[in-house]
Image 1: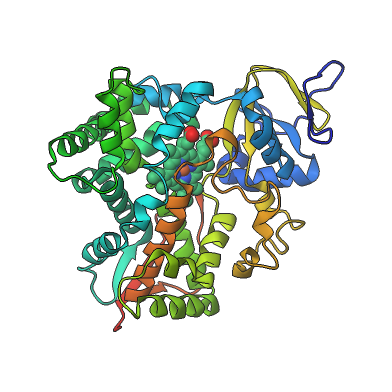
Image 2: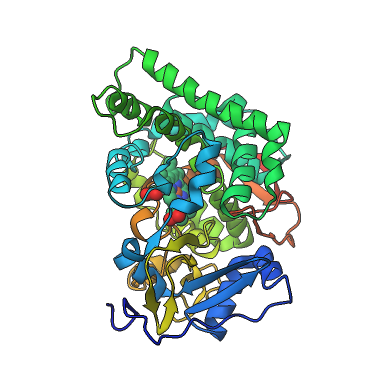
Length: 453
Ligand code: HEM
């Protein structure tokens, strides 16, 4: 027990307060509009645990640094992921993905996949990663209007395809986006009707996503080049040759899709929000550009050089704080427990609103101000226990978090060194939508101008 934060003892303990909502609809409209804003408001008004009704569903929300500490310390004892991801797994033709496993099987697979998803995957490939961005942006004309999210989706998905699978997803990108958004919205967050899974356009995309995974496996299997550092597909192929492979064949194919889906609605969204935040803060943008120009002065930068850019790093971290693309994580309670004096029964759908502390002024003063100095000594606001959780919490903490951080910084550094970006209208205000991760709307466009470095 962490200072009476939680307990196994639930006798005579009441259920958490139920948030008042509309008849029938409950709080569904507020949740659909801005789930994080709703959770922050309820945290202030009701406390760190409350029940919410939305149409025919009911769940318990736990929030605040206490909720993150609870999940970090004892989450696996009381919470399970499995039921959430089962239908999504089916769409990929498998029973399990890393994110859908609990217990020892999860630990084993996580340990096995960890080196492929580590920060080293990109740190050893800066020249190739930068070259890829240069090639993908070579045709941008002066003054061209660019739709921001698809622009970043292309760059990020190609990078991860190259780094983790050595296989370009180029002709499959539209299918990957359609598959991911439909399957997540229908099967995991359940905010779209299930008939969408039967539409021919979705079915075609789904088939093509699996085709891409098989293509990546085949390409790597036939490759004669021995890589210095094995990529994800090399590791999967080595595993399947073992007498007792860790992954079944269908798990292996689904795992090979991982690199293509992992960044599409996470890193790409974050880069889009970061560009927006910098365009809205010209002084910070000037500092970042000065830093990145210095970085490229002596040719291709290395990891140490990138790490030293404090304005760029602060801007990336502040974007992850203010625009957390994964606002919350979902679980089912597998045993009764009490949290902050209220009871959660086994079988309850629990939402851990991991990013609520990002907007609590006791941890991040003036939480709605984009302030890149929060993350450096002496402030180090993100280091307070449970306060900063853009990558989730507990056993399923994002496995690609180090890789994602470097990818965001390197991509933004390269683009800001090569191009000047401007908002179409200085008054433009971004409207984040939940799709289901926090995404910039399709109406976010910028103009680009190549810089003469
Ligand atoms: C800004 C970028 C990213 C954000 C905000 C993010 C966020 C998250 C979150 C919140 C989870 C936990 C889900 C849960 O507990 O239910 C997660 C899991 C995961 N992420 Fe990320 N992610 C990002 C980028 C990436 C990238 C680039 C990769 C890989 C290339 C990746 C690979 C994974 C994997 C494999 C898991 C499952 C871990 C497990 O179940 O043990 N993520 N991510």
